Image (cartoon, rainbow, N blue to C red):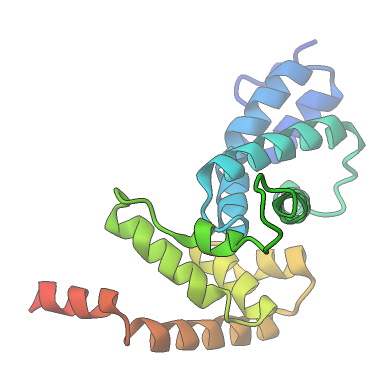
Length: 202
């Protein structure tokens, strides 16, 4: 069955098409519209491990499409997807931590898996290096400040949208973002990246 809508370019149109039985076209439009956002959230939550983020994105979209019929509209689709993505990423990290205890080896010593994961590839570009460095800064921030900064800066969401997603007032979000930016700036100004940028512009 077709809804008669030529393009499904809004969440409302996608939901209406899905409920009308045009599920294949609705699913295609849904993935096209939200895949980038889901991947962006997953990439940050999984510390820029691209393959893991791709796997998480696929899992999130599969779960979302399966649950689309029961979506009640109590939040926006983006808010709903954000919560699913965070849950999937948390589960992935939990599983990876458990698997690290069963790494192949003959010794009984703990394995420094974190150090191994944090080493940048030899051919990493400067931007990737900086993202890894930024990750280390973000990890030092309180959770709410880190969450607000990522949603505001990387995903370019409004404070109102973030408020709906995380259940925090707009005023508190603005304070969180202000303090996050202040702390990040303090770190960056003492980094080699900042020194290199200043040298390149002098």
